[in-house]
Amino acid sequence: MRWIRLLMSFSFAVSAASTSARPSVLTPPQVQYLADMRAAAAAASKNAEHDLLKQFGSVGFKTNLMLQGGYKAWPLASKPAADLLAQVKGALETLEYVTNFGVDPAYQKAHPGEPVLDFATIEKFGHIPNMWELRAQNSPLVNGTSEHQWEIMEAAERGLYQFPLSSRPLPVGPNPTEALERPHYLGGNLRRVDVGLGRWGPYSAVVRNDVVRERAALLAGDSGGWENACNSSMTPIHKWKWYDMLHCDAVLGGKGKDRPVPGTVDHQLHTILGNTDYFDKLGGSLSRFVYQLLTPKASATPFETLLYTEAGLLGPLRPQDMKMIVASFAEIFGTPRAAILQKFCVKHRIPLAWALFGGETFADLAKDPAVARPHGRAIVDVGPDRILDPSSIPATNATLNMDALWKPVWSEVHDKVAKRRASPEASKLKAEDFKEWWNQVAAFGVPIHSLRQGDCASADLCFGTYRSSTGAKDCLCKLEKTDGEMAVVSSDVESLLPESVSVEPKESVGVVVV
Image (cartoon, rainbow, N blue to C red; front, side, top):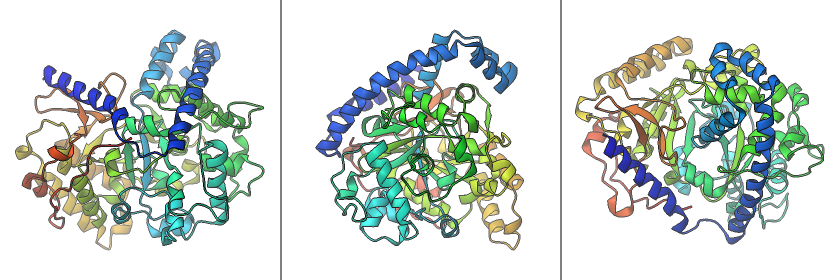
């Protein structure tokens, strides 16, 4: 198996290295913007190393680190500052960048401005459209978005990110062509939450790291949240009490600065430092972040799942730019939406994984103020296992015997959950019910262990580790196929989908373009 792993590592390294030779989906101004921003980010990140080394070596940081995890934190607290910094930098190389979507109409009604994005819309556009594209086409998906929210997005894209935009300012805004200059927002999943950023929907598209590396700028926190809480010239949509606890200058790079230096995947230490300073009083301190980033089986509060870094991705976010889609087990499994999701993933050869999130949905947790507020109870697992959907095995490098797969168990649990959801008892479903069903499929399934430093040669296409058919720990990665190599979906894959899902012959999706 060792030679196979070496061959896979070489293939993924060649794939990542060849991206620069591919045609660009970016405009010339965007290419220049990213080049200039990368140079500035490299200098800012280098400067941040000195501050981090100083903090990592301080008694105060080491004491706070021990307060986070007791004896579990000792291996980190006892490390020399330079070694700890190297470990943090290595962990950031495997960080996931995600975009969540798929809120239902009821949630959208309670949270105006959140688009009800579905897979039919993605198929129609050929990519996940940004909100400006939907606005330019008068889509009803953004009918609930207020003028204030558009102004906040406009201010963030022009002021914080400093993107090159040719459209006229609001209230006119971009036309359909100019809307393509606008970013698609991603979040850096700093605490390796299994459902990604569940606040924004039950589907989490995990973007290829090479795509984010080539086409994205990073900020220390959510740009809309900063504009809403920190920009005195903006009319806030809502003023949460905890806004007063934010260190607003941290996003800009410090006191006296009027604009931040956006980070990149390769140069983001200043962005991370800004994130932990920005959220310090809300529970997102540097010591807590380092502990959660580097400690297996750590935990987080539901509120901390909102303390992400933000990435503005330029160019379209297409199916081929995703290395995995993760779905909420408690919200999607056993529903008609699951069949639509499976069909989409099989068609586009995107690996699909399921996430438990403690058997809850983010909306369920948000109903309890004692849990959802800052410094609530730490009940969210950091980096828990996901489960690979059996229909996704051909889209990965997994070496598993499909004939001996756990289809009977999978189908039995699926039917049981679907029946319960359709019954009068559906409203009484609890987290314990989903945990029980999860344990049944996990016992026979393909657990995906969270990707950690040193697991794989590259995180561009790899999204975790698993136990192969030989029992050895191996990287689990999306297979990249060119037009000539794309295979028709096999009958084996079709047999693993629910009976209600038919699989069409595979369409050619081409190579990834960055």
